[in-house]
Image 1 (cartoon, rainbow, N blue to C red):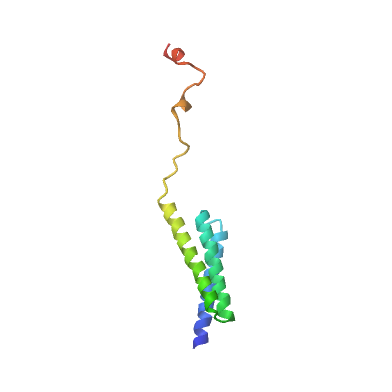
Image 2: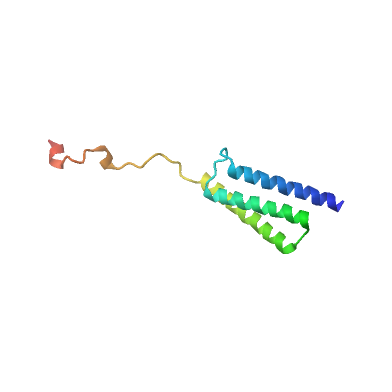
Length: 111
């Protein structure tokens, strides 16, 4: 029974690593640099968990792989937060001098 649970966990780790890798490499997922770094860390962490589950449990390595997953998740959530609360882009900012002829002096404009 224990080997069945280990096999199921390993398959889930492989699936999560593949999903994070696909999200990182896909053009359909519009992520920014913080989210991309988080997805890379998630993919590496889940792949490490899968490898360690197949080879045998080394608790220090499992803790480090879990740390990668946790940091990756925090970065993905931070990127999502920044994306949701970002100011909408309204185009380039305009100055008053963009709408006037700069070669004309003030006295010439008044006449």
